Image (tube, rainbow, N blue to C red):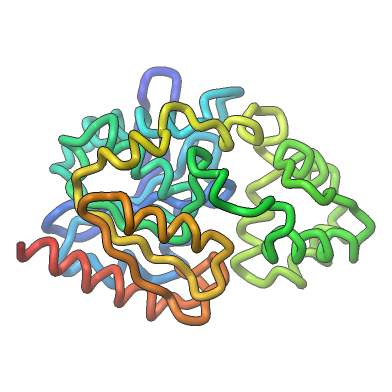
Length: 279
């Protein structure tokens, strides 16, 4: 299990293939296993050198008590990029991973050749979206937790959610996993380890990635938003305001396209990467 020691932080990563560099950044409370589960690393390895890593606090990386906003995560990306000797990379980010990718494009543009977003919500654009507690994603989770006797609340509060997950009994955990399916189960298994950190609050910090800074991004961006995404206003903003951005829709997906519609998602990512490589 390869790991990088970056001062007091240890990052777990996996790397395969050869060619232009592609870095995969998973969602908040996920881990790099999502990319293995989706098959995207195998789909790209014949044409690209693909690196996936666990964000701090996730998977097999170390779990510091703080440092979970996108600016700090972008600095972790920079240090990982340097330690592995990567070339300017195409960065694929799912959900919060897309925030990290775009913040890296702003702060470390020499390390980011292009960005592919997957259904990303930006704290700096929160005024564009309805209350996240009213989204289908959160409402479904409310029902799943209520079915095992736990109330996560009507407003999105990840710090509270992490505490609830940590105290679930094995029977409750199995009950929720059965409802969530394989992708949700992997997400849930991760969440409890963040209970003693500031991650739940920090992930919603703008941390300098304002709408003005987003509009400064000059690298090419593909905004892949799911057919049933709650963040379509964000998608419209990106294509209307970023100088080099186009969008596409992943049919049938509801925020978890890399696993819900893996074959389609992988084809869309591979097609865009090939186009950028040939330009």
